[in-house]
Length: 210
Image (cartoon, rainbow, N blue to C red; front, top):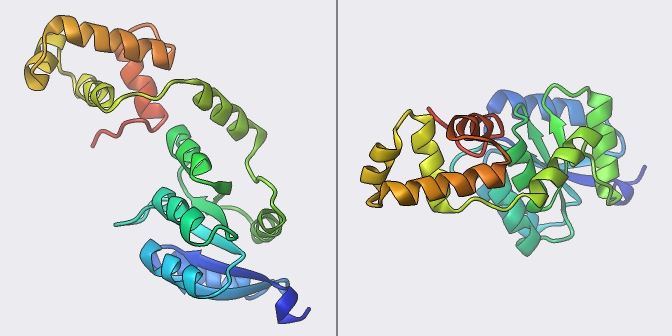
């Protein structure tokens, strides 16, 4: 296959071992031309702006620029490039954010080489590579109203074990306001109480508690 017909792939991952493993794996696929392997989202975006890239394989969790932010900027800087998320995590909120940012699919870092190769081809063809279960969860999340920054802050304090009175004091509002916020949160998350709201938010990756 001539190079001009190959799928031009760029890999971005901040873990050296993963980068080298992917580099070695991709070298076995005749239909894919590896443009570059980058260690950061910033570097990957610079490359995608300078030369044609068909598909970008993007690590979800990187620092300082994560995969979701890379996807958002990719749409602006190189809209013809398809973004594929590669991750060891499968938190609903992160997958939803990646989908909303333009990801064409999600791949586990444990995926077999043939699956990764086929997914790159499908992404290049404009197909979505999300499992039916993921698409169902994405659709459920799309139907749910977004939590406000204040509600996220309240959820984090609930998850840390603070009472309504303590949350009110920390937020500078009344306990009545906190109760209203918790009622709104429960409605948006379709749960019955503050404890379940915190549990669901942690499980779905809406909030993170160290």
